[in-house]
Length: 572
Image (cartoon, rainbow, N blue to C red; front, side, top):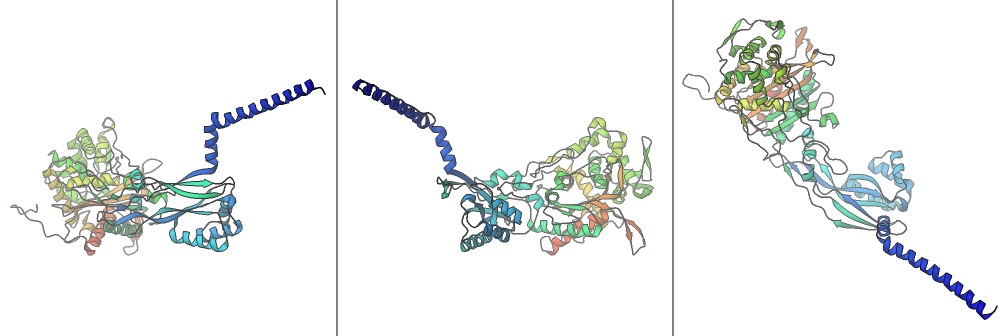
């Protein structure tokens, strides 16, 4: 090879090397400069990970400062699947300590993943025991994160009000859902660092989060417990499907108790039990609605306690005969007597004196057909049909609570207006949320109606007589509402029984509502050897009485002195 050939060959080789070097440099520039953000992000994703753990949730207190729901220390437990050891022992350990099914535990342990959540919000004691047993067995790969778990120091009180918290620390129902943003605070954030082999080498706290805000309620834990216990006993005694009880302060609208129970499983934590049907579902109020219509009639001066009516049955409206309960005739009686005996045909005539438009306006002003604004999620409006759709028959049956549908909180609030001198308060569960009330009737009309409703309880023949409790001067109105049938019309064997009451009648401090749904209307009385009927006054009425008696026995209520008398000798 000549010298010139060698030089040419060397030049070619040098050129090729230079070209290759240029390509490598260009590729390095592309990777490290042009595509640097992309590859840096990818590398960080492969080697770094951020885990969020919910912060300590705010405490929910009752009106006396007692915690109803609070967070206690717990663990959230995860697994580094690729670097664990002794998986067969780990599966068995998860079964024994966390109560997992064998298949569930195996799926989590043998999952192809760098990170798998095994359990959230595990009791601290259980987590410590699991960690120690894993250490003793030589099991590696478990990761423990400090977190919190919801606890209920006073037991299962008001679950339909409080709601529940999910495994991710989010409110799923009740006030936990309504106030989730303020209660939950800001989550903790942990930084996980992995090596090239995927192993977790470091866990560091990068954001300590922020504790959630506390929530103070108007609920009184003692009032709530009494209501829950008495509802449970009432459901068993009266063969009802479910029941609710509400206690309110009529002047402020504060809800002191909002309880419910199911006939088959009163303490069930299921979704049905967590649904506060006093707010989310409706029923026909029956004769409790006679008090609502009476307030309008007294306020507008179309009736007085001594106004006389024919109380015979039936009363014909637009060619349709409408009957009293059990088609009973009462002859000529005054309005006071008609309320005491709960005479349908008299209340129809009272409503006719009011007229369709005045009755409709009054119902809407009393809050029926609209949400009350109470803080629980899922509140419904109830049913009051548009004014243009009302007929004389609609007016007639509405006078005794048929053809309209209400929620428990609407009905309790309406009786607050009667007790509160004609001012409808804003019902609320959260302390400090009391809004301005609105006047729906004159103080004089409300006072007159309170005296009439006292007679329905105090009179020997009154439909509310089973609510009477010496020393507490209870007034109120019972009602037995029919239940609509899916096939149209009404069911024959099941009704809604209700009692709306307040005490003491001349200056009420408390309103109590009890409602039983899916109440078996007919039953066999083995002592009388005959078929008897269950009414609101004979079921919900006694439960109201027992609630008040239990609160008095616990020292939470004291009997009242007899009311003062006026110059005319009447209590007032």
